[in-house]
Image 1: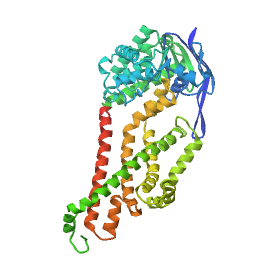
Image 2 (image 1 turned 120 degrees about the horizontal axis):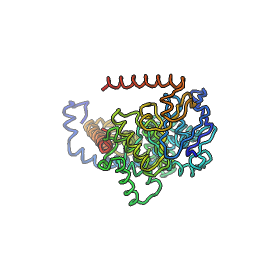
Image 3 (image 1 turned 90 degrees about the vertical axis):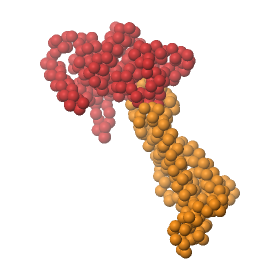
Length: 260
Length: 236
């Protein structure tokens, strides 16, 4: 029984008067408690897919069911409540610069009208889980990339959501910090049993964390299955894709090395 | 003392004469009064218009073409009027509200009408400065539009809004000087009546000093507040 069930999801954007079909009928099943990896190149439609799950983007057709909730049938108020059960982490962290770490993590509780003392307890608990207990009074502007992402993760988790969507959460981080953040996500998954949807273009991240994965290309999944089987037994098309991914990786790490 | 019969140096020296400054106390008070009241009006209405413009813009939180276009058009029309024309235009309006078309209170209407559209545009550009990712993050957490606006957009852009308000207050100060020509009183009135019509350039100079200091203080306060905020947030 799958926890996230996406059927024939379609989304078309209008860009400069032209129609751009970003999702061309996507099907996806994610089991509860797993870390599911979605990989694809830029423009494959990964982020759009992620945004359709909490309806930051409204799909044109298809269905998205999380647990027993049909996301696309929710009215405005129900949608706001549902979003509180879907945490999201971003590549650029998207923290609130005007708030301290404490108040960033407290934000989701604040807007739900949770009492001050409960906010206090939950924030401390969550901050400890992500290893930020000593940074609560700092502002995001003074934190390193890894610390910022920890705040982002804490903010996404403080509401105790059922799903965590990680949209390129480690793509802006250096390799060492990436590993730390991935370890953190794995640990959270093991401890709380939260379902994590990991969207990335980093092959290594998927190999490190995920048990199941899917490859998105041009708005369609071209490969789905266990990470092991896809890595050991790629079909010719995905094989070619991986070759491209690995090549892209080398290019990226090379240029980064030069920059530093 | 006039530049027509005295040297520049003598006029400058004369401009520090305590007699002149004694006479300036009341006009300075009038200018400050006009500035403060007009600035508050500009702040309130400029914010409202700027916020409406941003919220109802096509990629805003509450896209509404009609109000976006109307408010944008209104602001453009008001901004295309030279300040002097605005003062003349507001004479009947002031008469309607205060029963007379001259004096400090009457001119406040003209000053506000001329500076509100400018501040509205400044507020708009300050609010648009926010990283769209932050809005998306707030929405993904389940924030309502009101929560996104009051708890995220306003606090995040507050330093820019304050810097913009400083610019608007300085605009108001220069408008009060201009309004002096139309019976508003204040420093502008002294500058015109004595400095221009009676060639008393020492008085004119004294007015200039006051205006320069007023503008410097305003800019200083604005910079101080907005920089302190940015420093607290570790952004500079």
